[in-house]
Length: 248
Image 1 (spheres, rainbow, N blue to C red):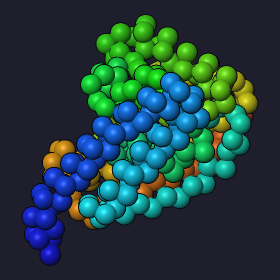
Image 2 (image 1 turned 45 degrees about the horizontal axis):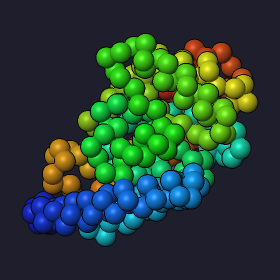
Image 3 (image 1 turned 90 degrees about the vertical axis):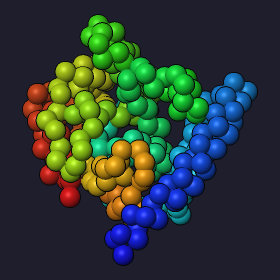
Image 4 (image 1 turned 120 degrees about the vertical axis):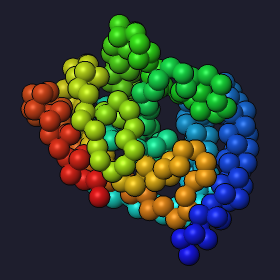
């Protein structure tokens, strides 16, 4: 059965990528029209729908199983920072869809800001931050501006605090510099929400192709922590412990 699933993953991955690519192209046009003609809310809705369709494609053609344990309980109209481990690019699709009520924006490397239909445009125009990992000054400025954007709009940001994705369920230590910059620049009424992601790495265990079938993806949001409740260094250590302990 396992061998059959491995064989089937090749043609099914081809079908999935063809449909996912079509989804990218179509929504690249749709989101541009939405933003430039109808404004932010219409653009956000188009991004949500794109990611919702992507999840359906993963379920139907890759038999991916999604388990979402949402315990965040954070207020909607306040700045929020989600702090997560990182295992694959596909968890971004799940975060956007399942946490869409919080308007999640991402901190991403600048290379993703060009050349990818739908994704690049959304990163550049949808409120996310694009940082140059080789330029510390630029990165710090982008993070400061991102925190100010969250304060002003009362939306949420997502930081993958390991700095790079892990290749299995073993979480790498957090890199605290970016976290410190973000938390320092958030308002005192902001909330920090830890996210634990499990088994997402299996979706890219063979690189980008083929995508293994039947992966059980799990995303857990933990109870929100108010920024002002404790010193930043202590808060970061608590976040790291919560995220690690929540991986299963």
